[in-house]
Structure formats: C-alpha cells, structure tokens
Length: 215
Image (cartoon, rainbow, N blue to C red; front, side, top):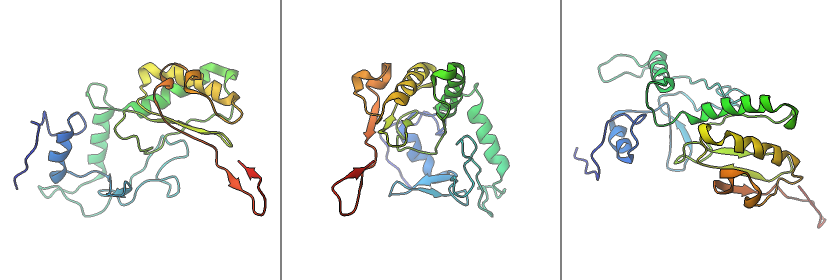
C-alpha cells in the first residue's frame, strides 16, 4: 500500500505527537479502545462496549471509567491483548515525565474541586463537578459546561487547568445567582468572555391547549 501525505511524521505515537498526519499513518496498524464512526458516535473497537453511566462503565462523578475488553484479540506477534497492556498505556499517559498532548480534563476536575472546597460557603452546596467522555470539543484541549435546572447551559472551550481555574470558580458563583442563567459575554470573568462555544437556552415546553410556556 502506498500512502501520499503532506507532512513528515515526527513520530508514530498519537499520544505525544501533535501533527494531524500522525493519526493517518497510525490508523492502519493500531486501534483504540473506542473510536468515532462517520455519524460522530462513539463505537467499541478493542473494548466490548462504550462505557457509560447507564451500563456502569462510568461512575456518577465521571472520574472512574471501566472498560470491558473484547476477548480473543492478539497483537501482530500472536501475543494476547490484555488489561495489562491498557494499564501500561494509561500509566505512561499520566506519568508527568512523559510529554503527552493532554491530560487536562482530569487535572482541571481535581483543581476545580479543591478550589470549590476552599471557597466554602461562597458556592452553593449542590454545585457538583463531573467528567464526561466527550462534549464534541475534540479539537480543543478541554471543554467545560455549566448546566442548571431551568437555566441556560454554557459550553466553554480551550480551558487549561494552569490558567483558568479562578475564572471557572468566579463564573460558578455568578451562575448560581443568575435566575435563568443568562448573561452577556462582557459580564463573564476573564477568558470566559471569548471562549464560549455555545449558550443554550433552558428548554421550553408547550402546554397543550394553551399559549403558556413552561421552562
């Protein structure tokens, strides 16, 4: 097979390489636990199923993900693919000595929880932080959403744990006080003024035989 590409790959490891072309070269000989199909949906590859809260694969706080592996998969040398291989990869990714592209999601959750605990009574007790597998911000290092009952939902992109925790906490306090969650970009703290990917109004439900709306 001959593959024409527009770049010289800096390496063949997608976890540490930043070039798009690495993914193209890497794809024919390596697989992921899960992948995305042509419809933008997560599908199992080496995993037996896509982890979710519903099937018990994702914990309620979003910090623990359990993958069940398919049976009978082997490496090119005939050795079986096992959980030890997954463990090795995961340990390599979280090792601070390895310059991987991003581990920002878990770092941000940890920093936000510590900051909220330090904030004490200034943030409501029912304010919770949880992780999710994907919010369709794949080309951004970290994507964060704010959601409340009967409030507008916000999606912010390009968030980094090192720089943006204070802004996230400030907006958490602001968001708690907004009746419908609605505010202008100029009223948001710091980086959140320019990093908004979406602002989604609260759901409006039409009541039958009436012009009234409930949200």
